[in-house]
Length: 433
Image (cartoon, rainbow, N blue to C red; front, side, top):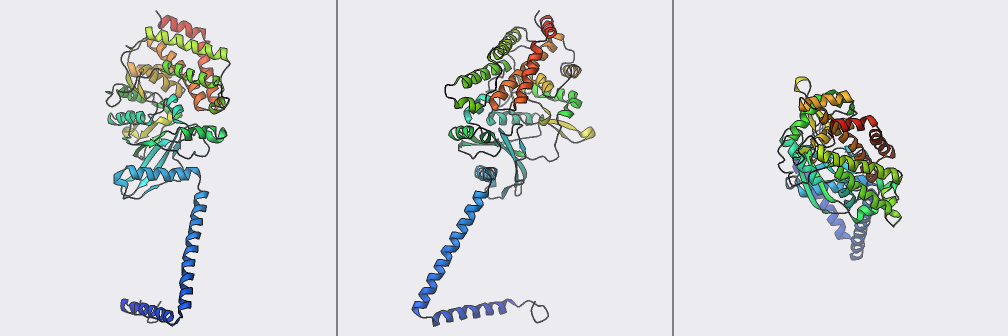
């Protein structure tokens, strides 16, 4: 506060004061000898160098203290700003320091929430970088395909998400904490570094109002979900027709070959790489032989014309269904189209039932809502594909290193059907005739 009652000094007085200070410094410098002036100059240079070194050390310590996830997040933001031209001049930052969501195994995908100046909040979805590209291809994960099916679902009103897609060449990425790399002594991380997936990101607006339904809520929405899946199945496959049709039995055989190759690989590190825990060889082969027999049965007796495929989600669990609005305005939407493909609508319905623990009476409601009047052979096909899905998930879990308990649960669910004589008689009576 100034002495004249708190008034700030005028601009003119402040300039005059500054001029006096500069003049005093110039005068002091002019009074120094040449040797003194040189010494002062060298001191200033030394001080600047030391300050720069201190700043460098502080930055290095700050960088070293960052977690791999924080470094990955910074790289992700830099990549997005580079690729989205309209965002290059805007502030783009992570709204939350940690990923918004992770896949159940915490390894395949991560989603981040970004705040974009003047644009609002967005979700950026990417591979976590802990699996090599070859294994991701074996497991059937492809963000380009996910983008294509997610876009189609958005266009027909089955999803509330209309994505943007960014794609670049492969680039090594640091492994995130808690992924498979930490569990297998760096073997998987080394493989991922040698064969990294391409830098692929799906962007879409963040819908805070959309609430995840959860597995417990799905059984209360069977009718709505049957209608939603029918709408998806009837969509014209615009933008996705180039993708090969999906067949669960073909995938089972492909996963079988991949597991056999990994187990029988001469190099010991391969089994460690996949962390293979399989059933005994004889039991394993017997289960796969049953799957082959089922494939032959459906190839001949499937209720649908198998030359026609449908746009399918193929993984409608409670975490893939969202609710927007309430009361009369309530609407359900699907998200997470990483498993989506052109395929068998019966398998899509059977997967909905299996992932959400539907009872036999729930299945009847699902089939009645979807087909109206349906025949027993249609339900037999549905039940057979439901069991096949359990085997598929078990094999997929072995390769993707899912928890052993989850793999065992799926194998046991499959075996329960295989060993059920009444089910065999039911299929024989209603499907094979």
